[in-house]
Image 1 (spheres, rainbow, N blue to C red):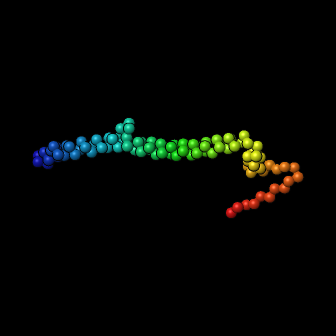
Image 2: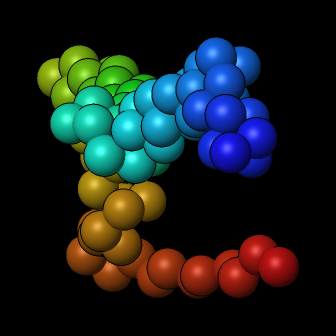
Length: 96
């Protein structure tokens, strides 16, 4: 009889209730901790992608603005598309 009384003492019930609550919040709740961590990781990945694309957008906007100038347009075509004038030779130098 003594063991049963000790098993259901107030202290043990509080500890069991606390453990059950923690387990519920960690694993079974709709907004559980594990899913929350996965969503936080995904948010960080998407914010990193957003920063990358904003950087690329700024770079491309600069290039687009520069393409209005004929000298820049010619340099851009020569560097990126290996275009050349007639009778001109192009030497490609590989950088290590």
